[in-house]
Length: 397
Image (cartoon, rainbow, N blue to C red; front, side, top):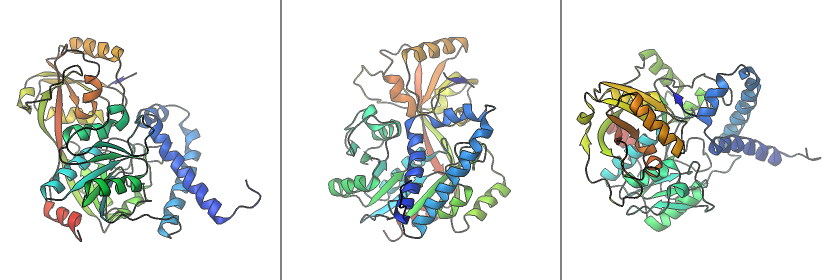
């Protein structure tokens, strides 16, 4: 429902493998269903205290796994190209995907051949490696790709998109088939098996260290804040919407003294009509966000931070915004569409605005344009030190 608003002999190799498997289990647990929404229910329950010992256990396994990588006891695989990772330490809603898209476009503009590698969250495919886009056309379905990968494939031209849990194998495919210069890892901060040249971390300015600031499953942290020291670049997101105090920024810099800490905004760019699945036409026009001025808007989304979506819409000067938020990565149903229609009428709205992440899932259910649904296109914009940022991305390239 949406929310309206022992072995007899146990050697070191066995132990290291167990630690690795424990952490992988926790990471795959986040792949199996909508952890963000699940946690919001758990964290509001009186049974929260039962989860705290599990957080201690999870934290110990994360620390030990990272330590074993630092000591070289876990093998790190290296690809013969530049690898840039974009990730986070908090579950959901840090602006990671817009950052990957912005970074890919920026590298392409710099005449760099780039491909994006994703794990393919919630995808339904038995293929170990799936090419979602070859840069020219979309080669896989939404179910085969996963939300973010399919959305990127639809809106990024000239950039191959590949999904696989095994990033090393996916990288080999990208190098062999597309001859790329740079590989971008989406959600790669915890995927330490593949060596990277640059680690970029996205932090939400609202809750940079989670809400509450505890490790999974009693909080939303995937790693403790000290993990920031592994980052080369830290992007503070939504700085135009949620003010970050100088002291908070100094805390980030203190945790990662060698990292380049930059502020970024989510800039609303265009809106375009939702194209129903039955229609073969592509979006052939985009309007400026000025069309939202003075309008009553029903915002519909299934993302990690729906409040940030509303705040971005408010920058477009609407008359008002009502929010109908579904769980992150939500698969819409016919019942949901009826609910959206009812909410649209109850709000006396002029338009329904959704995100590019939700676009295709809603389009699959709209046989014809029964409701005035438009998609808001946003872009992550780094507001400072772009030259230094570019230099760090391309140094030794």
